[in-house]
Image (cartoon, rainbow, N blue to C red; front, side):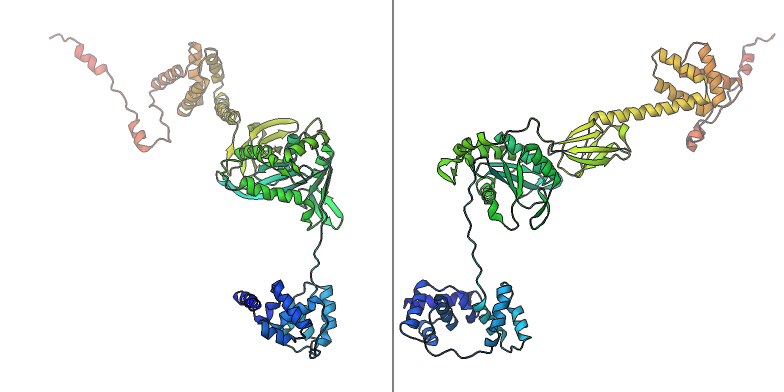
Length: 523
């Protein structure tokens, strides 16, 4: 009764998954049912069909169990099949190409004369397909301070202003103590990769002798078998800290299983259900977690000790840090356009206006932007991860504004002195008295446009003779000269018509006629 129910379960599983009954050979039978099949076949000498009918199991499943047990064939030999002549070719092909699909193999056999049904052929191929060899692995053990494993991990995205940035976790694990260093970045650039190394070395106050890397572009640019083209920047960095960079073999994640398991541990124990306000707060929480909860867990290789206790044994054996840290800034050539800004990573950073239309060098690290001209540092800004922002130094903009105002005054002064030479003496005397030269220059320019250069020259000479270097004095002398010539007041031709009509010249009435009223007659 139990065997019948087990068989029904097997068949119902196959039907519920939409498989035909012939495909039940791929479904594992219960151990007790396999034992009954072997006993009926070997001890009771039942045929395959009889066992299938009595146990309600497909005959192909019966044949598979018998074949796997290696029992000798009992009863009459099976009838010959038209696929028999193709079996050597099928076995050789599957041995050379184990993952070749049954449909492709059917086309190959059919081209060689096979006329059988494709579904039946697929069932036969399943019997002769070689099983995949399961690889066994040795447990890797390392000496204290001998090795660390490094990798990036992607933790979704974070929105900063108008920009959507990837949230990348830099993870380094000491292979002996399993101590974890965790730091988050907003990109996977080379400077962030190296900055993660520097921070990890500083946290442990030492350097492991060997660092294992996956075949990521920050470590390996190209690989052909055992020929490895390392990233030259990583090689310089490794030479500075005197450790040996080693990439793991392709598709060999087991070789850096410690960092892979550490990333899974970070996802489940630290990052799950955590609110992210900003990356600085997240990194502060990650540092506290590494020193606290992650350090208190049991060391996998020494269950009687915690990671913190094993780390205390490992730290004194690390390589000492060099006297100076490695500069992790990215060096990018930039060109300043007409406006005093340079563009980097979706944002604009200000520079002194004296360096427009020039090529400079931008040095970027995860926290700071520096813009240099040779050895001279022109500007230093905090790095922004927003989008479309203008990060400015106030003194850069104020200096440009001041120069624009000064240039405007100088252009007006040059034009004035060129047209009216006497105006230079007037400006000098006005400056000695502390007057506003900008206002004086503007007033004289307006008088120049109204009265002309000759009249203004004469009026300025009179004002200087009177020792009153002021535009109002010059205007008074100009009006006197105009009235002496009985000319109308000057009017700017650019004024609107209604203003021109309002300023139309009016001849004053002569007053001699009123003098007659005061005369006394003889009468």
